[in-house]
Length: 193
Image (cartoon, rainbow, N blue to C red; front, side):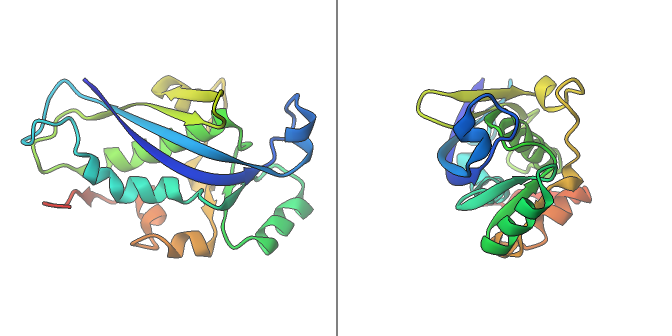
């Protein structure tokens, strides 16, 4: 069975190297919609694949990190990178260009790492991240599956290269959330949310 949870965020970026002049040469923004799809062949004690309420913690916080932020590719011009950091309190530095496709891969990897580090206590079994769909516009989206997220052909995305501004980190319930995820610390789902 597959379940889906929708998240939203507003974000600005430039996608260098793309075909569209406006997108590659001018900072611009989108109202993103992110669909997180989980799958399992089992149901928990509440007869659910995974309680939607559990997604409102670390998963939501990670996706919300991009809200009202500038997504910056670390391979962009150094002066541009520094200007964005200087003039925006909320930014995320990525080891890939912030295209819709790469957003879907980055978010998949982030949530997959968090999910794999989470101890589930309400009878959940074999819950897996099925895919991530990132809607950049009303008419266009990218859908990432596990083989895409970890694809060497598309380029390996080192999670430790993703950096969040101080303001983004301070907005999390635990400002060390990303450090803990990268370190492989175990997260325990709460008894109740």
